[in-house]
Image (cartoon, rainbow, N blue to C red; front, side, top):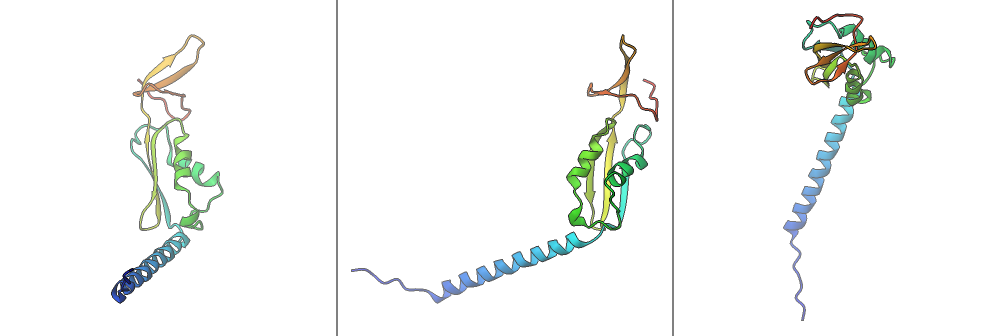
Length: 149
């Protein structure tokens, strides 16, 4: 003979409350994320770590990030901003060693970058010239700044 299982009202209520609370938390987080993504950027800040070397200019970085893509800083929403793509765009500059782009709680986009510093200038037999940095990577000459090594 089979025994009948008793259905506990307490367990049913616990399961029901758990499902409802979980659903409410998910709905609240989704709503908050949508609201956050709809907010607009307030400002744009560029910080160059070793600015004493003039290879990278703040205006050039801003132009490359914003004007080339026709992005209006005051009108773009946080949801449409692609931080990873912005970091890749900044890192394509041969004079940038490291780039970090992030948005803070005040809705300000921060671009922090570090310039590569040449340690030697190489002249080859063909008459070409380039720099080497401390990681032995070649860097082109700059029209803006000459570094005496």
